[in-house]
Image (cartoon, rainbow, N blue to C red; front, side, top):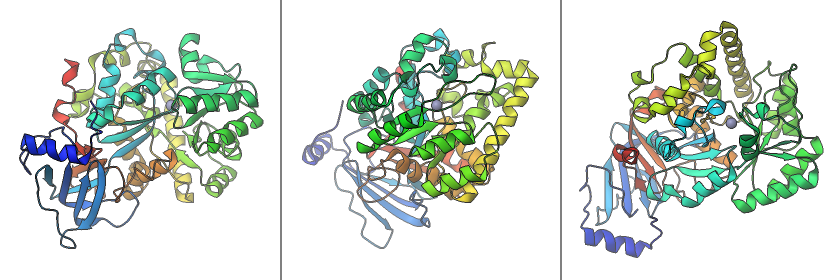
Length: 473
Ligand SMILES: [Zn+2]
């Protein structure tokens, strides 16, 4: 059900239902009406100094007022409005995960047991549970993601806003294994092979017409022992030009300096994973800085199997244990999983640890040089749990030396700019969609405060976090 009704109807409905201000201590999904949040510190997502004792007013799903308490009158609690007293807490923009896959939660080794009906609904609810109000799918079957977009469960407060690329564009003859997919059949769903410029342009137009918000290019040559074809520079430029003519950004999967440089030269908007196979060199950094290309390090997807192999227990995490499906956990513990293989094979474990270390060092260099860092998790890969991983990635970015304020920006306004949705999302500003996160404590002192979620607001509606997973039963 959607609430596309007029403000007048909304007011009439709430009047009839007799919802009075502060009448419901339990979150109620209802018509947007007026939402007033007061008393908390505001971190706006754009890097400005926090405002203590802020008031944020949303009406019909849009932020209409933002001010320091005392500087303007707080709208009176008229019928149809709801007031949240958030003293001791912090208000932020809803989080954005700029890189997810909705098709599977264990990546290449997804088990049949995991493919239970409702799993994707469950994953979508998990994002929202963790305060993630926008996700961007960067490689999924088009019918799945464009269909989910059309359903627009965000309007009902049951899912985040979904942005999607559809399939990844890759070179003709690129192996399914290069994309981490198990079979030729699943490869054909999540990838589209492009063999010349005209084909590239046509595919981009088709995808945008079908609902794509972004174009994803797979641009990895593979390790020296197992080379994979990549698209030519001419094809790459044609794809980027076609996407940009429609105002759509291009995200590029990369792993080496050469690949990142190729993406920058082709005019892409951002690189996914960046450089992880080798130290990032000066020329690559220079190109990234000069072109202001976004860098999405996805550290947590490299770390996840290592953590599992080292004995991490999801039950030890009160939030994760509420959102992890038993079938997903079982498939992570399957002997064929990356985690199990890392545990069984010290060489594999060491190689992955080196890649993690390299990814962190390269991120540090890019960050210090001023490259815009964007948050993405690559959720959908093994043990990279929806929603939970956004918080894990933020912790890892802080551990890597990023200032908490910059990490929050990476997960809000910087991600919004990369997704080209910054005119309507990514910060707490008048005129933007009321996608908000209200947490206890101060995330600038400890980033883990972002896990102490009091309220998640999407499109001006308070999400009923307690009952998000009721449909599972
Ligand atoms: Zn990915």
